[in-house]
Length: 287
Image 1 (spheres, rainbow, N blue to C red):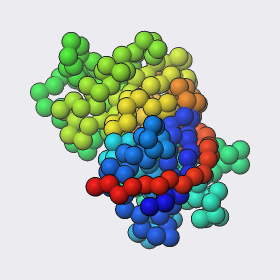
Image 2: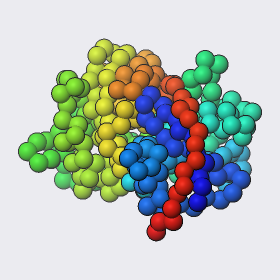
Image 3: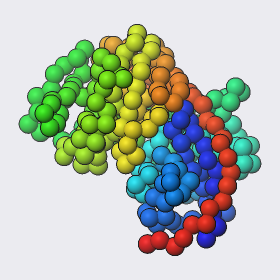
């Protein structure tokens, strides 16, 4: 079938965006993998699907599929591209919309300067809800909040565990460029203590309002930026007393700004959303 798409990115985290507001679109995991393939398809970290809302008080349904074809709960950089897409394509005139995700309702807002601020909701710290199995582990307290030891082949790393609608394990490193992201990232992603796998964040603190970050994303590998990963890293840094105020997060793809007022409050993320091109692809029938 001929499939129309839009290519976008948020700080280098790139997406294929599909409009399913007028007709239902059901793609197989193999078709999604082909779309995301950088050699044989369009190429993307995630596929974003725009659908009509299925609950009252919400403008759209937002579905996210990783490059491996699996559906996931949340994607912060994708949320910024989502609101820019529906506004730019004339699907809404609103600059602030409410969007239904697997993780709940979020509220991205298009700013006058073209950047987008997203209310990402409150972080979740209850370990069974992440989910994370901490049985038999002895945490260490850092400014009143736990870090957890993860045994990896040949190493033990200490991670801060939370959910931003999707699971995150954040560790602090001294040099982000030397961090073993390609080695430890997949080991953490598939660690048996995370029943749904996990996004592995590597955070270097430059100063209390500036960090550098790399993220190995569940089902996608290392990406140039991860919005929920940036939120999770800043929340962890604030809870551990390493950070303060609004924090600039320098990713390999660009700059994000994250603010959080503390437990019970929503995390707010501001960053770019960029259109790259529109196109069509002849997508074969794949099981």
